[in-house]
Image 1 (spheres, rainbow, N blue to C red):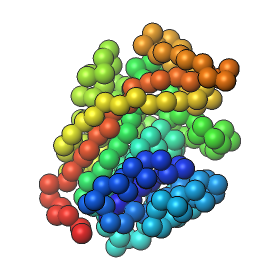
Image 2: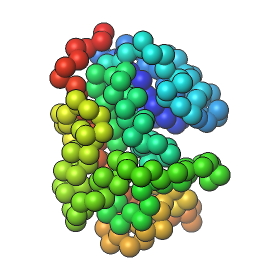
Image 3: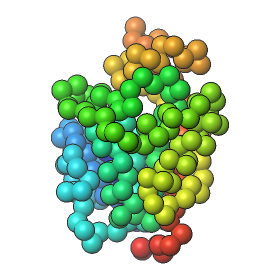
Length: 208
């Protein structure tokens, strides 16, 4: 059983569905439009902004997917802790941006959403380290994620490309010489690397 948090239009939800071991997917999303799309790929869709209110206290999942949602929430650590409470495994996607000037990125599609960088969160923890390479980013993020989720340890890490539209980019990414820009229909598409972390709690058996 999988919980896909902030599932968007369902592209990754659809990919998760391809795995034979996945027999049920519950998706959460803050966008009503995206929820309509998700109905075609998820067994259940919950329109919500808060994981804490979207999931009952006794609900448990084999995998909680948090792909590129931590930088779009005002309380990333709370989201991580809630995910760790209900899942035996966590799939987390983080974009590698060594030049980030802000620890929490304003929500791409709703600029008016109030974002409050907290005194100590996962992004501040990561950027306290010297992020001079993708490997250093992975090492820093692995330790910070483990600390933020309690008993969870990083079981596997994968490096994948991440595509952003210009409106979703922090101005600081223009300083990154590794960023490659291409143009399609006169709109810039920026390619960044991201890391996918699979975390597991060795003290919890599979829920189903």
